[in-house]
Image 1 (tube, rainbow, N blue to C red):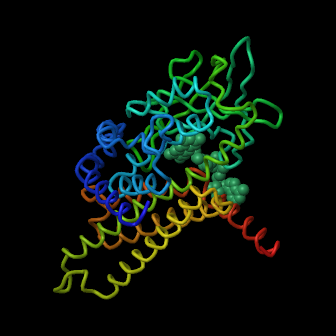
Image 2 (cartoon, rainbow, N blue to C red):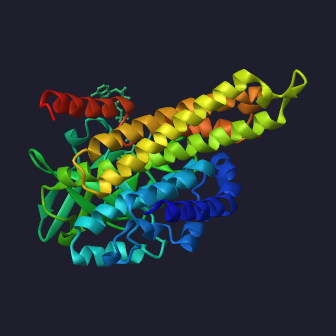
Image 3 (cartoon, helix red, strand yellow):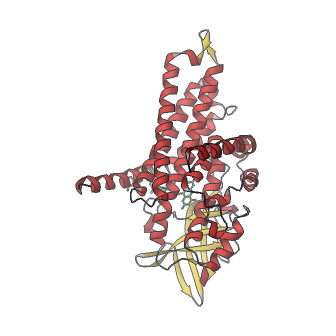
Length: 378
Ligand SMILES: Cc1cc2nc3c(=O)[nH]c(=O)nc-3n(C[C@H](O)[C@H](O)[C@H](O)COP(=O)(O)OP(=O)(O)OC[C@H]3O[C@@H](n4cnc5c(N)ncnc54)[C@H](O)[C@@H]3O)c2cc1C
């Protein structure tokens, strides 16, 4: 996307988010309820189909356009940004690797924007050690039977489709598409959380869950490759959510300090306040550059994409945490109250350092690539 179209798209997303998403953000958080109004609004804007190829009925939007969408949503409502991102994370691997029959069943109907999806990777025994998973899928007659438990699954109780990583061999894993009405599927209790409270999180439990043969996504035993590829992309998307939160918090701090008076002048006239604002803006812009660079690398199949996506996710999530904390501080006591959005933004920011790989896992990925590059003289 050239710079001009990028800014036009951002502007339309900004207007849309301000009008259709922002008014509900505090309500989703307070009432801890799924962002139904946002889902309805995504339909108006055609946002769900943005991330899918034209061959499956999507708009074929590149990673940068998806990043812009999640960034602008995250700027006003992290829960809404996450909801859209997880629908994509669940369905895009099926669109990319699924058989024509599975794409017809799952992906094409989802382009209308009515389908909710989950991606089920994490288990009670661990999230960082992703491929140490215990959930098993075994052949049974002309289908599959899944047994196991997935933990902390976003959209859990609200999804129509669950994309599930399961063990299919001693050292092999595969992806499966499970429908909410498949026998043997149930949920744990809905978790209560620090932030992104509108987004439901729960265990997804498979007890002799039976699936027809064609629900295997792509090739048998290719789950590792499919999910490794997908994580590069979803880490950039979480970076976008984090960046949006940071941008929103920075703007809240600028607006508040422009209005609030102390010592006979607005806070914005105090040099130390301006110093904080400068640092917050610089960190946000640095994260943005890295994120857009990673997005291009993903679309160009650049071998550096995985490292750049980890850098972008790490940079944007740590920036979101720091900027929201500083923005709250600049609000003084008011920042601590739920009358202002900044305390919600700070609570929402924390999760971006955790899901889709905790910060130290991103550091390990980055360091491994740096060592390889330097030691090989590349
Ligand atoms: C609200 C929420 C929503 C989520 N949504 C989803 C979802 O939709 N789908 C899904 O599959 N998962 C989801 N997750 C799970 C999330 O991806 C995991 O929680 C995350 O990957 C961390 O795994 P863990 O919680 O098992 O932590 P652990 O792996 O136990 O790690 C705990 C800590 O140990 C340290 N650590 C672990 N390994 C290393 C290492 N190798 N080197 C250095 N330090 C290390 C880190 O400090 C880390 O923070 C969600 C989680 C939450 C809280």
